[in-house]
Length: 227
Image 1 (cartoon, rainbow, N blue to C red):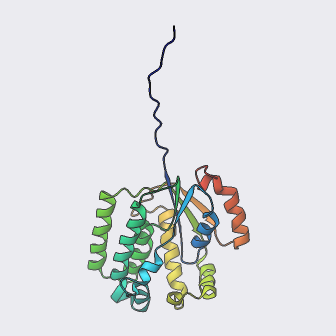
Image 2: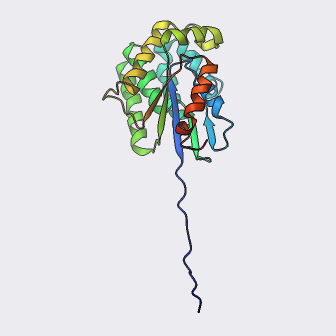
Image 3: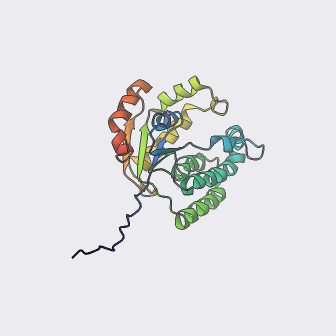
């Protein structure tokens, strides 16, 4: 006499992971994403710089660098929107690698504009209200932060070498201020900032050949085993 098992086996969908790569301007975030772009289980989300350069014909990024006191709120409002769009977009592969996040946009770039006096208190308050509302009403899922830690002097030299038009006049002092904010957020973990995930710190002062070796050594940790 035989028995039949009518139980239908259903498997839980596998968890998807989001990794945000953070760091100063010219710390090597794009190069990091380029290294992992050919892995079949990863999807790459580059920082939407082209959108910032062309908002219905307006270069908000360029305007902000030319006159930050006038255009900082305009740019950062749009940065917040476009980064939110990157966070909540449907994820098609097990691991999503994102260049920066809505958090670094606020904690590093907006904070720097406010602290340096280029964003008035009232504009900072309005942008902060928007930011807090977004975090309350949207699931900004981050499972790992990879911090490409660099010396400000190193990234200043890289900026001179790569010659992006909006960046040509960036002073060392600006990069030092951004560096300190990244450190306060991801290393010191200042209580005024939220760190939503473990932080992997990589020495990004190394040249790309040496960094590739580091990425190869750490790839399973970075990609949650999908490597």
